[in-house]
Amino acid sequence: MEFGLCLKQSRLARHSFANLNLSRPGFLTIMPFPHSPINVLTPPSRGICDVQASSLALLHNTFILGANSIYEKASLVSEKNVPSFCGYIETWVRFIQAHFKGQESIMFPFLSKYFPAEVNNSSNQHHGFHIGLTQLGVYASSIRKGGGAQFDPLRIKSLMDTFGDSLVQHLHLEVELLLPERMGDVNPHELQTTMKSFTSFTKKQGWATIMPFFLTHIDKSTIPRRAGWIWPPVSATASFFVLNVLFFYHRSWWKFSPFDNSGEPQGYLIDAGHR
Image (tube, rainbow, N blue to C red; front, side, top):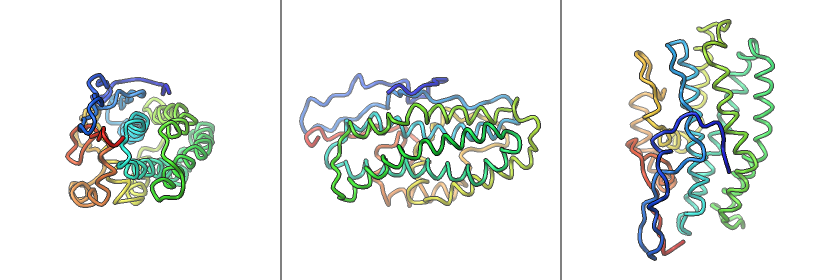
């Protein structure tokens, strides 16, 4: 799989699997940070007027890092960690599906007044991703819940291959739609109100699943510093509660996240004796 549109390497993308050693049975090996087939896009940073584009770019980055993690780790998961990995996959799928739902119901009605053709195209692409995402989510759920499906890393990768390249390209192009040079006729106050509603919708989708996933897929090195602007748009209290309480409801799922609950890069421990 060769996910495209590589604009900037994050601190995760600069590492490889060079020192991965699975030759000693039973030896716990720390997997290096994923060598991304997708490089993280650079959040636009040309002035305060592009805050919304930066926010969307950073949100999309979490989806991209999740795709990297699933694709890279599928072949490395030990048998005892398969249910947890499947829960991780299910959360990634639900997060993207919730994101699309929020865009369709909140963002697109507003943006279609200014960019009808682009919004219509983006909506059609969402529907195009639906089948692949649903198949991946159903497959992972069936494995985790003992529904009869057997875990096959090649099956995971082949399902992602059906929509992965197009999805990542789509994530890049949606950010470009919000760049300042294209937003000259858009009412900035209405845009801000719309994005706040969209953010509120997203945060209601899964406090014990989607929120821990979200907060453990944020590469702090890609967040632009801008006076008066803080990202992610989660209060310190809520963030603390998610990362120090709700995080532990499905703690084993987040071992596949690129960052731990303190925001530091983490590897994946592989029990080589139980592959």
